Image (cartoon, rainbow, N blue to C red; front, side):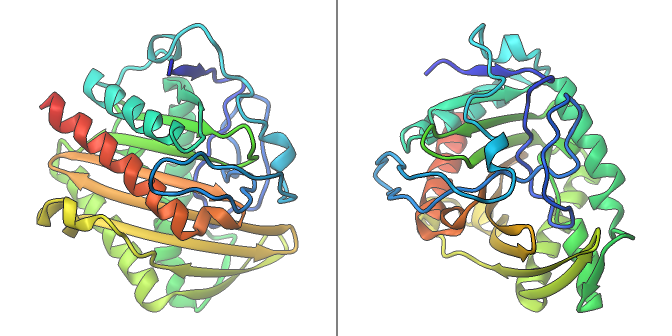
Length: 299
């Protein structure tokens, strides 16, 4: 598989902003809401069977044609990435594993777009509380806003690849970064704590944003392959899925976050109902395992 770049003018950042309304910005700037469009239930399996399925009517799905804005003129070089080669290779290997499940349209997010996305997160989600959102229970507002964490926030030398399946309007992503300071490690630890708090005390929340009422359900998926990772890595792994329902539709997501020595890997899917399924849990684990193996080989 030849990796392909997503230029800034056409990239769709498939992020995980819980406290944002649905929508897609196609003018080249970082979108106000980086959610994926819908992913229908498919027959993904741990053995690498291709994901198949139809279209979804989740708002924004029509804007997420797989491969839109992806150039064929090279991979990391065309995207102008400044991340270390070892992270780029690991992201490429993870995306290659995704391709075995049918996500065979892949592109790196350029440094320019990553910088815009980093600014979006710094100014909004990681402020600890979105002043425009009314959250119930009120105690869940801070961890709910702060959980919008991205490895891209750990520095400019981070990398992200997005991948798409032609038969789906949804997508996934893999991000990698290296923890190279105590401040970075503190940020990672706080993220793990926020996830734990949401799963423990905030599984069912409601919030109002831009005049739209949402109901949010957060759950912890069952990871199947933890016996194959070190105890330390297992302790530094967090997985959660969420379902957000509002007048503008229902969005599902699943996130797997893990630390391997000084490296961070985050695999995510956002879209329709399948994105939160056990099948996609297995896919996320397989992608993370492939990236982990590439990092260990590089070391």
